[in-house]
Length: 129
Image 1: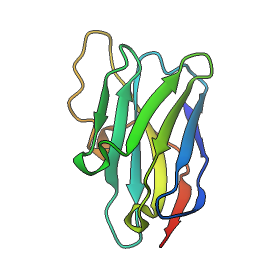
Image 2: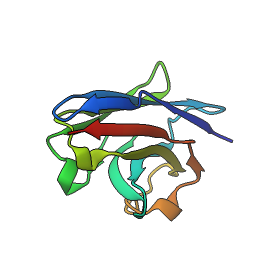
Image 3: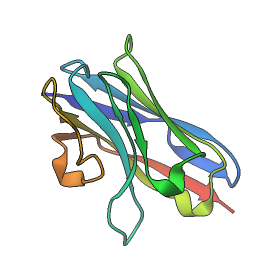
């Protein structure tokens, strides 16, 4: 079992920055892909970014490229999402999710929420105009 705990959300003005953290306990992320999704009221859960722990490959939704950066800290078993130039439309609950990826396997379904094995409880990000 993997437990995921997000932190770092809050209220920020448009143009500001936040860094979200996703800390894992129970197992290391070494054979996992980890992603951030977000969900605004009345909308479907949306892929934001993902990172494959082994090798460090990163993937982004087109609308987040250049503003958001996903990274990992091996020692802390933590994934981060640095969010810059925030806009009011970035307001949502941000969720961390993890998927086990067997060694040597490709990872194509990183944008699909149902592909993930574990989810955190979410952290609220509110961007004021």
